[in-house]
Amino acid sequence: MKKESIKYEHFRERMVQKQIEARGITDPGVLSAMRTVPRHLFVDEALMDQAYGDFPLPIGDQQTISQPYIVAEMTEALQLSEEDRVLEIGTGSGYQAAILAKLAYRVYTIERIHSLYLKTRKLFDKLYYYNIVTKYSDGTAGWRDESPFDAIIVTAGAPDIPEVLVNQLAVHGRLVIPVGDQYSQSLIKLYKDEGGVRETNLGGCRFVKLVGECGWRI
Image 1 (cartoon, rainbow, N blue to C red):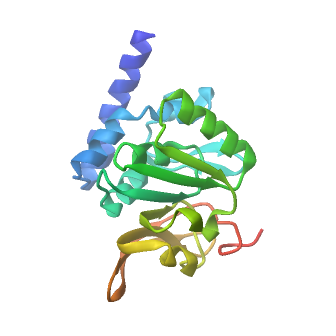
Image 2: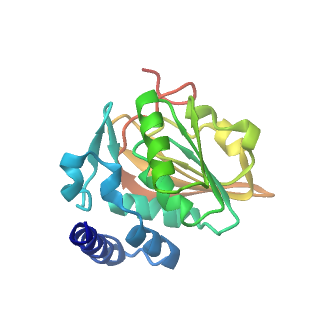
């Protein structure tokens, strides 16, 4: 078991050095989280040795665990502090939420696929991520009862930015979301202040569809 642990620690270190730092991610907290969270536990056993590769992997139900770099890029763009409350739309494998949980005070994450919701809740408990709060629901409508949030991250591609999520951002809050068609998107960051919302395009990306009332319809 110890050899196995050392092997994956080596894989994580190589992932951070060659895929993340080499592409310009510098936030110390993000780098530390990527070095710490056991990504291989968020995929099926047959895919564990591929978990630290420079690509997404299937997790069932036509969903994927995102490429490590895109997880790091989106997390860095949120500019998190340890007092922040973060909303994640699309729990998926749970890996992105686990990274966020290392950086923020509390993570609220919503998943619309029941099998993934059950699987990730069990995994969070097993790994002692007790600052992650889960919900089985249509995430495109956000989580109004827990709003406002200091940061919101959407881990699926939307046709446009749901206004309901912008409304659930606190003043000085940040929202990161892929926006585009069903095949490719641009990663958009919004910053909200007293004067309104500023938008920055962080570049191209490709995600599965954001399905729901305020996203794509099935």
